Image 1 (cartoon, helix red, strand yellow):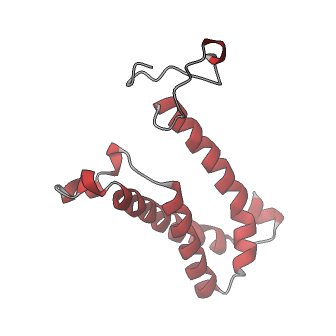
Image 2: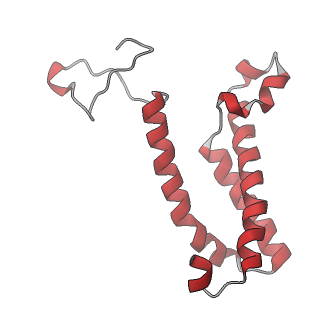
Length: 131
């Protein structure tokens, strides 16, 4: 829909997706593996096991920017126009990812010890810590 409103050729939209998504995913995995190296150093086959989890948004953003630069150079499409179109989706993806962290209980704050503050959404019970 955005391509029609901005009067873009469909080539730009499909070509950018086929370039940016794989590079962003690969960079997201590399970033995660680098910062969790103790977990992967003994077993290199686990490095490619993305179905077991382990993508980092920072690596995805870095990879997306690299891919956007490559795409802009190859197709002579203005880089900042591309970034301007993509950033709202990036913000939405970050928000959805944070809710995924919340549901999976992967990212949470400190233990809330004050009983008056132990209510949702200020504090939640983390099952694996039993706290």
